[in-house]
Length: 201
Image 1: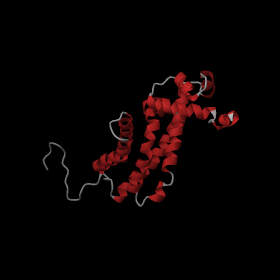
Image 2: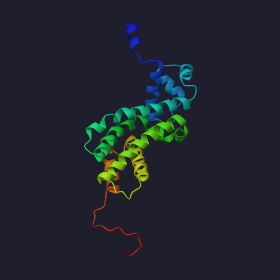
Image 3: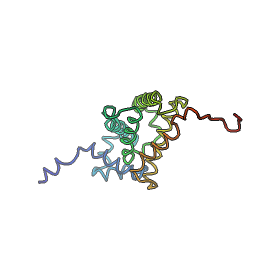
Image 4: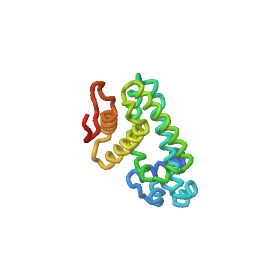
């Protein structure tokens, strides 16, 4: 029975990563000692796998990239339009906030070459979807795609943070992100004239 229990345990590296996700999601400043204890290993064992806290956090960031890739894989085949694909992507990514929202506090990750490459790849893919949404008329062509991508990124992070703090229900998050984004960048009716503040038309 004991052998069966031991074999059923996750590998040490996986156990450390799972423990780190749980601990850091609850407390972004969690100490390595607390993570090691949660994983059921000693600090020396943790350090053999991850010599520094940065190494551990970096691996968690790469895990988040892989999970996002897995979450959105195949969605294009389910969408009848680019805007529907965008909605499906938001709905798929929002739930990951429970696990990875703490990574947004680690600003140094953006300068890590491997992380930067992955973020650039994902951003390029999102940019193409935004461009297709414009082509379909769902997003105003006058709004820079960089602005839409940045706004969506910020909205998703905000939804993760507010859900983690209990201000909104996680199930509300995707709908709120989409409502805020699309109400702000939707194409204006053809007969509507938008004037700059303080300028007479």
